[in-house]
Length: 163
Image 1 (tube, helix red, strand yellow):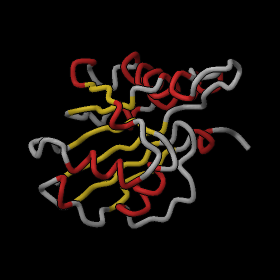
Image 2 (spheres, helix red, strand yellow):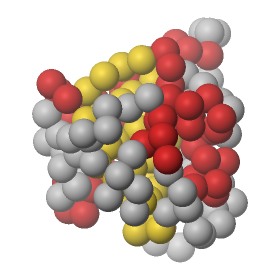
Image 3 (cartoon, one colour):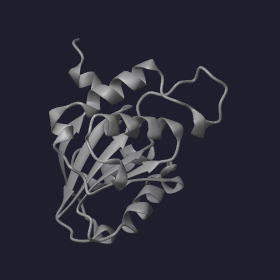
Image 4 (cartoon, rainbow, N blue to C red):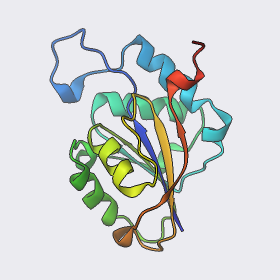
């Protein structure tokens, strides 16, 4: 069985005139990343490997999870291969993963995350919001043969805010 926990980077700042890849998190993004990574469900996931886009906003989101001891830093790989916005590029990355891995985290970007989650999961999700987390379980024993999986949960920051 394989499991992927997809995490969209937290809310980024547009305050400074920076290239897209260098935009940091804004105040709300920092809060959401800290809050979401402190949830007991998230802390209980224990991934074998973590893959993170090397954009500043995804790295900063991942750092919050490291700070809250969701996983150790020696299992994190930062890569340009996840600085993608097309779901097919994201899926290609996943097919290259070590088949010995069973449970992974991927910190990435929309539209790639939402489109791939909708392609791989059985639940339609209109949009994975910033710092949204979706876990999908697959019966497959290989990353390059993933078929439709089952969404175990979706956690979005606004779900925890009073209305």
